[in-house]
Image (cartoon, rainbow, N blue to C red; front, side):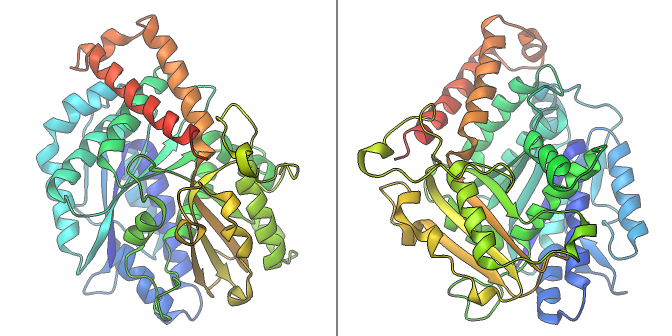
Length: 443
C-alpha cells in the first residue's frame, strides 16, 4: 500500500525532500529485493523508463524552496518529483496563520485537491495521507491546516497523519505561538495522529550527539528525516507472518491513537552518531533497549543526560499532574527495531504495566515492529514512537505564551483582518486546554 505525502511550506518541503532521499538510499542499498520492493511501492511510483517518482505533492506560496527541492531530487540520479506535482505562488502568507487558512487556502483549494487526487489515483492501494508542515509560519501552518481539512472532507475514511515541526522556544516568528495554537486546535479535530518534532530537541542532537559545530536547517532536517524514515520503512509486525506491513499509517494509528482525546506522538531514536564514528562502534540490543526505556521513563530525547534516578511510581503515587515528579506515563508505545540479530532482542521491559495508564493493559498499549534489514547505515537501531506525556510541558508552555499575548491583544488585529475572530482564538485555547488536562490526568 502507498502513502501520498503532501509537503507544505518551506519546512514541510525541505523535510519532505530529505525524507524521500533517505528512504530511496536505504531502499536501494545492497541486495534487498523484497524490502526494496515494499519500500518503493510505499513511497514511489515508476515510470515506463524505470524512474522512481515520489508520491508527493509540493505546496508553497513562494516558489524558491519548491524549485530547490525539485532540482536537488533530480540531481540525485536516484529519484525525482513529478513534473506537475507542485504548486506555488509569488506571495507568501507573511507568517500569518489567518492569511494562509482564510485567504491562500480557499483561493487555491481546487488546484491542491486536483494535485492530490492525481497522486492518489496513481496508487493501486492507498495506505493514507501524510501532511508535512511547520506550526510557526503562515503557509505551512495556515495553508497546511486548510489543506488537511480539505483532505478529510474528500477522503473521510482514509488515514491522515500530520507531521509537525515545532519551532525553537527562543522564537523564530513573533506570532509563532498564535500560529501553533490555531494549527494544533484545528488539526486535533481533523487528523488521526499528530507526530511532533521539536526543533530545540533536534538541535541538541545535532550539537551533542552528531558533533556538528555550525548547525544548519539541513542538519536539523536530516535528523528529523532519519527518525521518520525509521518509522515508515517496511517492518514486520507481530502477526505479519513474515510479510512486511501493508498499511504503515493504519497500523501506526491503530497502535498508538486508540482514543480521540490523545493524538500527540513523540519520537526517540537510538543510536545517533556521526557517520565517521559508525565503523568504530558496536552495539548490543540489551544496552540499546535499556537506554531507550529509561529515555521514555525520564522523558529524555537523547541517550546523553538520561536521568537514571527516575523509576515508575507504584500505587497511589501514579496520580499526579505534570508539575509533579518527572516520570512519563504512556498511553501507548510502538517500538521499531531494525538491523542485525533483531529477533534475539528482548523487549519485555517495554511491556511493564507500570509504564502505562491504568485503564489500558500493557498487551494492548505496547506494539513491536521488527526488520532484519539495517537502516540508514546503522548496524542496529531502535525507534520508539510514544503517545505519552512527553509533549505536555512544551504544549503547556506554548499555550501559556500565546495566552499572555492574547490577554494584551498583541497582534490580534493582524488575524482579525483576514477573518479570524477573538472567539476563534478562545475556542482554540479551550480545545488545547482540554488536551493538556487529559494528558495531565493520565495515571
